[in-house]
Amino acid sequence: MSTVALKRGAAPPRRKPVAARKPAPATLALPVSAPTLRRNVGLAAAGLVLLATAVVTSLMGIPQRAWQDFVHRTADAGYEIRHVEINGARELSRLAVYDAALSGPTNAMLAADLHAIRDRLLAMPWVADASVARRLPDTLSITVVERQPAALWQHRQRFAAVDVTGRVLTTRNLERFASLPVVVGPGANLHVRELLLLTAAAPALSRQVDAAILVGGRRWDLKFKTGETLALPDTPAAATAAFKKFASLDAGQGDESRLLGGRYERFDMRLPGQMTVGGQAVQKALEAAAKAAKTQKPTTI
Image 1 (cartoon, rainbow, N blue to C red):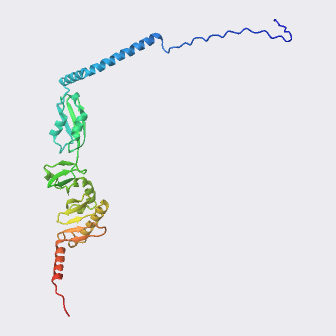
Image 2: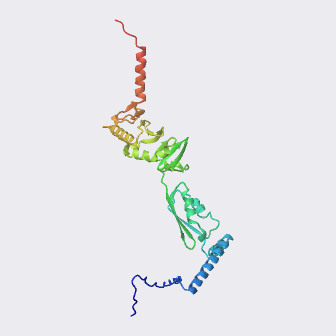
Image 3: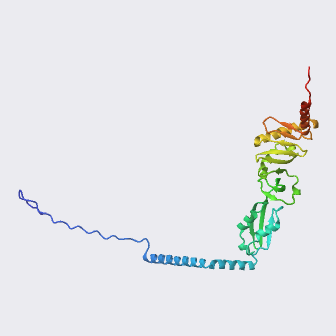
């Protein structure tokens, strides 16, 4: 070991500076090898070429023509609509169903647009729901759910059969629906459900109702088969209570106490807890009393 003796007051010898090492250049390690990278780039380029080719051919209509040619070939091979099976249709015209099913440009089975056929069926008045299915090779199966007529609607001197939603089903051959209730007036068809709920509160009396007249778009006047009219309140709850009350009063204790039967012409139950009775007999009695009061001479004492 070497030692250095320093004299008192002498400066220590200077050390030579150590040259700083240059950092090693950074290197980037690729996750894939160079051959793999070249192969992936080639595949991507090929994919772009195929995509461009597909776009060009689509614009030129080549796929459509190829599909149409394929469809025609399948039709020639027997995949063509030759039978239309219809289930659930009673009122619906079968000819109208055939027209909806076979209105496309071709009867080829694979070209049939099932959604379009169903939409055409749902546009028909009688159809509430419909389903369409292929039964290969040559049958189209159609099942429909028909709307049910609930009333006859009289408006502007014309009649139509309507369902509970008020939809007009038909205006022809209405004699087969003669047992249905009759609703009269503008917009009365839209209140059929309300009327049926009302009359269901007293079934025995509802069988005596000949027609229901919608007054002011908000309340009913019921016309009975015996000729009387019952005016009901304008809210469903009050109308139902009044109808039930009238039914119990009409039932009475016997035929002599019945309200229906020709003695009166009109019953007004629009006010809660009250019934105003008007009729030909009552009116004549009032007129006679008024006339007697006018002609009576004052007595002198």
